[in-house]
Amino acid sequence: MSIAAPNKPRPTWAVWLGAIAVIFGVLQTAVYSNEWMTQKVISEDITAMQSTPDCPEDELLEEDISLAECELMAAKVNIMIVSRPSWFRDFQMCISLLGGIIAFASIFVGAALVEYRNWAPTGAVVTFTVLLVINTVEFAAATHAGPLLRATYLWNITLWFFIHLIMTSAALAGHHKKDK
Amino acid sequence: MTQTRGFSRRAIIMHWLITISIFFLFISSWWMLSLPFPSEDFKYRVLPFQVHKNIGITILFFLAILLYLRFKFPPGTVVISHAHPWMSRLVIFYHFLLYVIILSCCVSGYMSSSYSGWNTTLWWIIELPNWGYEDEELNIFYSEIHLWTCWALLVLVAIHVSGAIYHAFRNDGIVQRMLRL
Ligand code: HEM
Ligand code: HEM
Image (cartoon, each protein chain N blue to C red):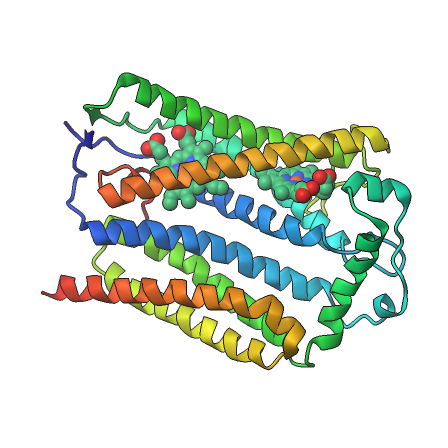
């Protein structure tokens, strides 16, 4: 099965790296937006720590959970409130906002790579490197946030770090190929 | 054999807004349903649920605009040599299915919410009519439909994305139809 060649020949590396950048860009934008919302919603509110949540029978039935699970939902929020260092909430909101903006920008960079715009290879190296730096900063922050938050955050930051590391290396390789 | 033009720019913008929104809804819904039930002391669910409903309903508008644009400015048909005609028909049917499942997911979410006793004010501005009333059984019924249509959507999206990546590696001009600046 072969499909007609596009109007302008585009190197294969740029097309697949562009498509992959778009997919991960979309996912990261969603992940960062959710993290921003998480920090926004879980404020420094201590009333939640002092009371037990309501767990009416009908709600338990509706969400198909046990009474013990329902009560643990409050514990989940408390973990964040109790173990979060004082700087953590503001830091997470800032880095999620920044990360979200750059991840969103990486969708455009991905599209530019697919189209093989002149600026796209350089743009990709720069954007993916910035994402890599953001992951490194997030990693450093999470390592200082105590064992409970480390367990929540570190593994997925590590995963994103390696994804961006691979993308940056691929973009660099493509960039050097272009220079020849 | 010529590569025909892709989707219009506005259709492409709609496609990507829908994509980001849907991934956000999945990721945030798994998190929001782990928050304590709403009560006097626990208000954590209020904002995420509102945001979920707002974005979910907005997707309906994006979807309508995408459909309108793709018929007003139809993309050229893909010419695939050596491919059986049934493959092209399958792809058309598959995209049709994507539209139907996104629509069902949104409608079931709205119906479930209507019977939950909670109002929906779209983006905190437009008060939407509550078609239902507080009814536990109907709420659970539509919640189940919402859950299963969303799972189905995730499966369809996974296959759709794998197809896109397949074509990207083949560099055969398909992804350019939806990925342009
Ligand atoms: C494409 C659009 C949508 C997607 C992908 C989506 C996705 C999801 C997912 C994955 C869940 C978690 C289900 C579970 O684990 O039980 C959920 C729950 C929920 N969604 Fe949506 N949703 C969408 C649209 C909507 C809309 C338009 C509304 C209402 C206006 C809505 C209202 C709700 C509500 C109230 C819940 C909480 C539990 C339930 O009733 O199932 N959703 N959604
Ligand atoms: C939540 C995720 C997604 C949804 C719901 C979605 C939905 C759709 C729909 C409904 C169409 C059909 C448009 C039409 O023919 O009217 C479409 C087309 C397309 N999508 Fe997606 N999409 C998603 C993610 C992606 C991703 C991540 C990629 C690639 C990186 C992608 C690439 C494409 C391409 C290339 C087409 C055009 C196919 C053709 O040539 O006809 N989509 N998408």
